[in-house]
Image 1 (tube, rainbow, N blue to C red):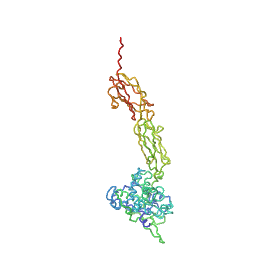
Image 2 (cartoon, rainbow, N blue to C red; image 1 turned 180 degrees about the horizontal axis):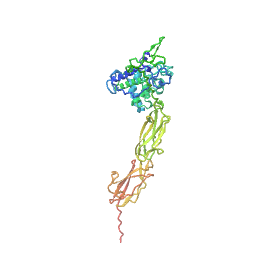
Image 3 (cartoon, rainbow, N blue to C red; image 1 turned 135 degrees about the horizontal axis):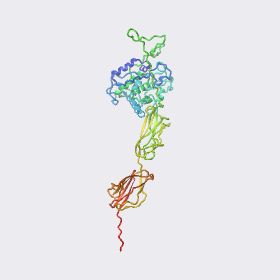
Image 4 (cartoon, helix red, strand yellow; image 1 turned 90 degrees about the vertical axis):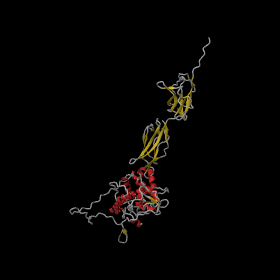
Length: 569
C-alpha cells in the first residue's frame, strides 16, 4: 500500500509545476484537448483535517489522491477512434485492457438509452479510470470484471488527506474508522451507497467491478442535467468527481489523448503509472513518518513571506494573495433528478372517426439512478388536424406520476377527420425529457349495407324511377353513422366501370351524374337522390360501396310500357 500511496498525489500538495507540465505536454503533443472554460474552477482541496461533512464529501472520490502521469508527448498512431485495432497495436499508452474498455463502452450505451441528452463519451470514463486507478491496475480483473483484490486509497483520516469518518462500517473499504476510496473508479463508500450500479447483472453493486463502477461513474457525471458535449458542463462534471483544477487538467489531457485513438490490449497488460506522484514522507522522532505538509501562510509572529520581484526603481512588490476559488454549484440529489421518460406499455393508437381510443398513452419516469420517479408532473399534448382531443375536450393535460413512476393520460376521443396525429409527453424543467407517440384516425366504417325494401326498380325511357332507394349500413351489427358510401351506375357489376348511358342522377344544373359520394345519417340510413332513365332501354346496375368494403348491387330496369290493343268496334 505504501508504494501505491507514493504513486499518488495528495491534492493539497499539488504545485504549479504540475500544471505547467500538463500544459507543456499538451502543447508539445498537439493533442486536441478541449480548452478549459474561462473561469472554470472546482475549488482545490482544502487544508487537510477538515471535519467530515465539508466540501470533500461533495466529491465522488472524497478528493482522494490520484495519478498525475500525463499522456506521452506523441499522439496515438492514427486519428479518430481506433478501438478496433488488434491487440498490442499502436502506442502502449493508448492501449486499454479489453474488459475495462468493454465496461466503458457498455456504460456509454446504457446511459445513452436512459439519458441521451447527457451525451456521455466513453473516452471520458477512460480518462477518469486512467487517473484514478491506472485502468484497474492495468486491467487486472477476472472474467466478470472484478479486481482480484480491492483497489483502496489511503485512509481519509485528516493526516495529509481529507477527514471523512467511516460511513459503511468497513463494508466496502475494510476500514470501520475512516472512509477510503474504493475500486477502479475510486468511489468513497457514502457516494457508492447512492450511485452504485449493477451493470454486469450478477445481482450485486460492487465498486470493485469495472462494469458496475463505470456505469456508476457515467450516471454520476450526468447528474444535474449536464450535457457533456458542452465544455462547461464537462468541466463541472469532472470537478464534481474531484474538486481540483489540477485533477481537471490531468483528466482533460487523457480525454483528448483517448479521443485521438485507442486500441484494445489483453487484460492485465495495460501500462501502469510509473512516475512518483506523492511527496516523500518526512521522518519524525520515534521513527514514524508523516506526509510532507502543504506550504501555508505565515502566522503573525512567524517567518515573514519572501519579498516578491523588485519593482523598477528598487522597490519590491508584496506577494499577491491567491484568489479563492468557489466550490462548484451543488447538483440535485440523483433521486430527485429526472433521468429518463419511457413508454409504459402503450399499444397502437388507432380509432375510427368519432370513436374512443382503446389505448391510453402511458409513460414511466425514472430518476438519474434508474429508479421510478413519483410525484413528477407530466404534460401530454395532442398535435394534428384530426380534431382528436382528450376526454373533457382538451388538447393538453398534466398528470402526476404515481409511486411506480407511471403517468397515464385520459382517454382520447377521435375527431371526425381521418388522418395521422401525435401525442407528446413532456416532463422536467432544466432539461426536459420528451416522448412522442404516433396515432391515427380512420374513417367510419361499415361491414354491411342492405336495402330497406325489395321493390323492383323500373322506369320508362326518359322517365324518373318512381320508388326511392333507401339503404342501411351497419358495423358489427350496430348502425354505422357517418359512413362514406360511393354510388356508381354500371352496365355490369363484374366490371364496375361507370356507364355512359342508362339510369343516372342529376347535378344542380340537371346534367347526368353516374357516380356520387354520399354518407349515412345518424341512424346509419342512406336515402339516394332521385334516379332517372334515359332513352336507352335495358337492365343496369347500381353498385354501392362503403368505407370498410361492404357492397350492395341493385338492379335497375328501363323498359317501354306495353302497348294496349284498342277495343274492337
